[in-house]
Length: 190
Length: 151
Image (cartoon, rainbow over all chains, first blue to last red; front, side):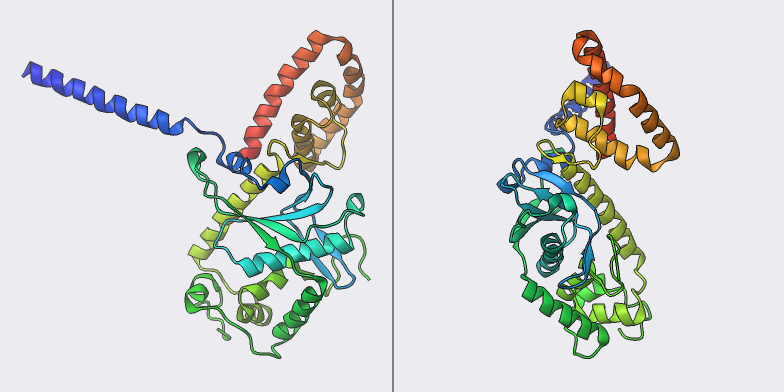
């Protein structure tokens, strides 16, 4: 009986030690996952300087647009580069329009300190949520930006869609059920 | 006519225009009937998304090798200890701008600091032991602020 109890005791000690060891080993590469994710940035950001973050940018000509980019970098080659962080499902067209607006504002009406700096023809989107223990589930995407002409056409489309003067394109039902607050919200138009 | 950084009344936000890339129907409904009411699950998902998004932004701004240019570059003692372009100095400037200057007590602290610190910063280069002490104290402050920023 005593021998069996001793064996049980040592078995528990063994299992407990294993658990502690596993926990410690899993924690080893630790650190802040968000900071770790920043270490694997695209090479264009090497030596880049954050010049704006969540600052309201506006322009009135050639069209009136405003927005708050997540980050604006001045790159090592002295250009401006806009970046957005997305934690949800990728919506490439959405991200492209957003970044294009920020870039257009920086081209036409940059903050005084950034005047004269060319704006890159692409932006960066960082998708995903950094995983714990250094396991990054982050992906970077280089997004080609829209030209002023394309933005102008978008703005016209925006006004006609909002005015209800044209048929509106819709998304698939799965997307609507998940994302649209009008569905199930007693919205008479949904 | 709009002036400064205030958008004109017919100005379109980037987020609003980008809705064209999601669902034109939703854009029309938002405009005609208001934004609609999110379900509890949608609200929870948005709250988590916003939190994660802000953490990612702060990590990007404070990432090693990246320097955020603060509007006011004064930070006398930190500049004397770390150098003007060091990330520690920038972190302290960001903390001053985004935390201290947001409260009355913080603004008073900053004002007092700016009155007291220039003469201290001037003598620090000639007093290695005082510099070491200031560096040790600032290291603790920087570590605490960095942890707070990442929290």
